[in-house]
Image (cartoon, rainbow, N blue to C red; front, side, top):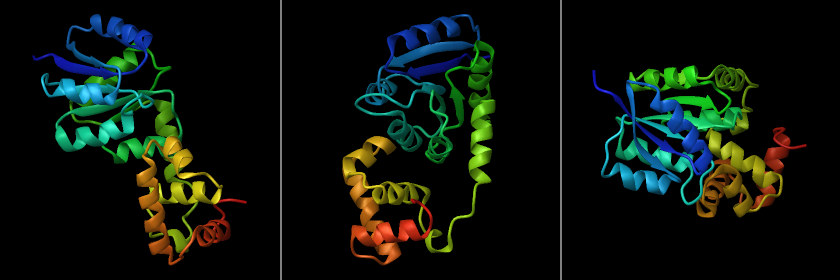
Length: 212
């Protein structure tokens, strides 16, 4: 039986060392790539095949969300298993929509980590208990107002942030997207909601309870 070829992307050397130690004891898993950010990971994957990527979210140069999207496009057979401290439902949903096969929190134990790697390698989803509960709570959340039903999940997040007075840069930093992408979302929001300025977006957000 071939070993599972594992890649890890995390910008903290101590985390990388700790994960390396955990993986060393698993006879069916081989660590083939480590990278401190998404850009380095993608470069290394051009020269080294992998089956599963353990992906952190908060990384410099290229974060885990952007990298997961790129992997889905370039290496659709490669399974992404997110390993992070973020447990926000919107974040989990975002990564799943972008192609992540599984989602683990960094407080998980060694046994769960190895189980998750093996599970996603087989093409099955894996979510830690906490992540699964958060995702379920998100899915069972309140219904989206009729006026906003044509908006994507990301557009709703951007609309709320705009209504809260955040700048393009602040929104981009919060959602791990570029300020140009934020500007594109804002333009699309105005078209879909048939308004012509920020004040119009704010009024709609207030009317639908996105902000107080």
